[in-house]
Length: 254
Image 1 (cartoon, rainbow, N blue to C red):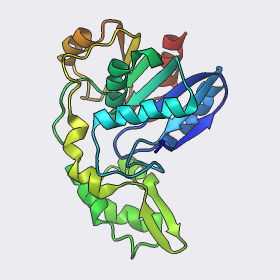
Image 2 (image 1 turned 135 degrees about the vertical axis):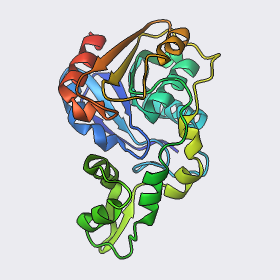
Image 3 (image 1 turned 90 degrees about the horizontal axis):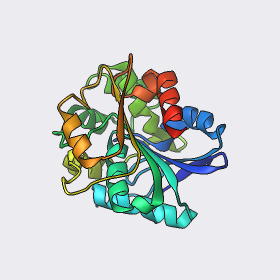
């Protein structure tokens, strides 16, 4: 089984991995900009997300293996890999296991450390959606707002909503498997893994996903890294300040 993707442009392969509960389509605006610089963008849906296959197994080892199979299928070498949040963790492990595939790694707002589960309320809210009785995105938003007050987060989550058949909504998420395996999302990159590839870590100045204390572990495991703080941005830094995100990635790639 090969991961679903949307491929944009021609040139050096540039793979993007979304975060937990996201999908490749979340990155299409930035992908179009990168594609104009001579890159072929691959907006990938990770397993149990988007249009990719569903599986009861969900952890970083199999997600890194999925990406290796994807590169084999598309005959990709010397790629650039960008991962946000959960996608960043997948990217770190992929770089440790398959460094010969990559030329550069970009990690958006995630450190290699362990993170405790913090998606409980969001998963509860998504599970509460009565999709058989909901007739519009507006109705879904109203129900979800009881659990998720932040409009931007709800809009991000409800991008997963689609018409399975006329008159019947569904989510492009394997929600039951993701709920059962949510602890896996916070797992650390094991300390014996080291990455020598050029690596750019980006963090939002309003985010707490990469804090000062994380820099020691990053430097211990990534011998050739740069850490850049994106101003006026939280965890969804690529959406909150796309100009600064774009310019820093382009500078790194140059």
